[in-house]
Image 1: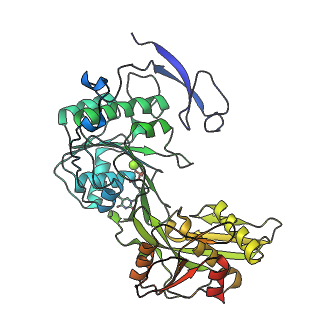
Image 2: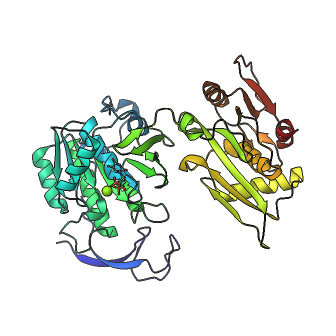
Image 3: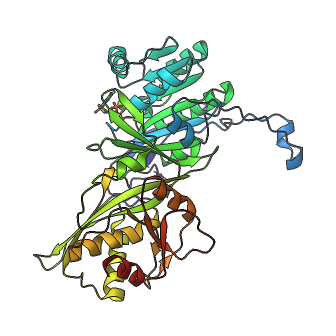
Length: 449
Ligand code: TYD
Ligand code: MG
């Protein structure tokens, strides 16, 4: 007999507590604890089936590996983000804000790339899905739709249909009657994910699970869920921009940091094959405060435009704002400029924007950002066809970044004729001018004289 017990769960991060607490000790959020009735975890609920033989220690060299048959997807971006195709029996969580395009991405996948898909929706009716499919202008004879929210019924149908791929839209709508908790609560999400994972592993069927994320950009509730699935993909982007980015944040079958770029159009999501040429926009105009840097996302180099606006502050405390870039890092760059270059920025408002709605983490953009700030401050435009590569250290030195040749190659491909980058050794035969710099002072002297 399983005993029913109650516990309190943080609705933000999934932390469990035997009694109610005002502030979550795990994530620091206030008033997020809600009581949920849970069943004692069934001891035999392990996801991997163990035979007698598997219970004894074995030599690693004796273990045989079945060759990984990956299912290739015709969507090149998703294929790459997954690490080169879909692994049978894998569970993939697709997280993103409401309205970003998760359902569209999954429906496109179901219709165009794969055979024999069961698409389960608890959010939309069959007619709505049909309307969306018509809009996407893809028809498929092998896509089944099920609109249900009961996990048991879904697993039952899936067992009968034996689909090649199962898609769940979304985990927050599912519930199992075995638990008393409401759909979307931590206990329900955990139980449903465990059940779906079990289905994937026993049937060797890939499962995609859509999950909404909360305002902080975390997958709502289930930090717990991230541990249970094999792959976590984040779908992000500014809803006011056309571009959507699919990022892999966890991948048991491939590398993370892979980035897929899509464009949302009237006929759904289109893969952007050559993003650099789109992300650098104001070609042909010489404007102050803009510069171009080369970053690497996953395996791909990308040219990114940074725009800065520096103005005299009307208030005692100057305003600082950064879109698409870490504001603390921008403050650090401003401090380096002030200390090492003597550029007085402490009484200036500084606004920074990375165009295209992309969020950049690669520190190789530091040099480009610094150049944009100084360009705006002095109101001198940077020569066109000049790209920047380099991280900036606290003492004003320009530090080397990985895969610099690949970045230079990308700039060359897009018609840039000069690159300012860290001092690199080795022969450079390419017909692009390379200006090696050691410090930020060298770089600024080269651009602004
Ligand atoms: P949706 O996929 O429903 O987002 P999610 O499942 O993440 O909540 O749709 C996202 C938005 O995309 C919606 O506001 C409408 C828009 N959209 C287009 O612009 N073009 C299209 O072809 C489709 C299908 C949707
Ligand atoms: Mg949706």
